[in-house]
Length: 245
Image (cartoon, rainbow, N blue to C red; front, side, top):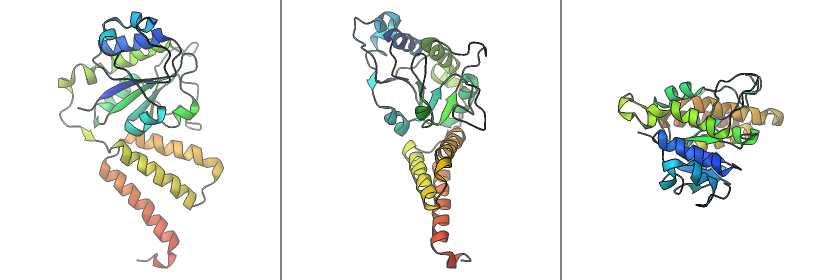
């Protein structure tokens, strides 16, 4: 069974990290990653909010960079919906926590649930690097949840993947390794250079391809095939006289 880890980016309030650690303990998760965390000493409010997670989840948290998460995990960025749609797709398409649970149950991949800052959440630049977006349906009048509350809701909905693993389907889809998928993104970026793709459209296209593959959970063979298609196109462009080969 693949692992689910939790990452918190640039939180300012230690108590929120403690609340998230407690939610992880409640729902069977143990691996907490922190990007640019606040002070989390034993005398901080993080330990007061962590409950029994103060004994293991919180003190064992690992500080990493955002790039580390992208390079080593299937990444799910959590965010409030901001009226974006398929014409913009920075925060779209998104899955609800229930839809995310159903999707992750069908694949074998280590996943990082990434929660952002209080008030502003994850930046657009960070959201552009993740594989999928998860958002909690809430009132349009006030859709933004407290950081600790939002994390607890998502962790609760994913509990079948962490607490009740014996009830998961016996056959899962083996997703390609993260380094294989990131390698394809690099090849795709080079391919856009090769075909002189319009610069003003490039970031949006790169983000769209990342989101498509993030939702599709490609296998290693599928990633290899996509590499082959790009290589074939590059070779035909360089040697048009072989077009009928």
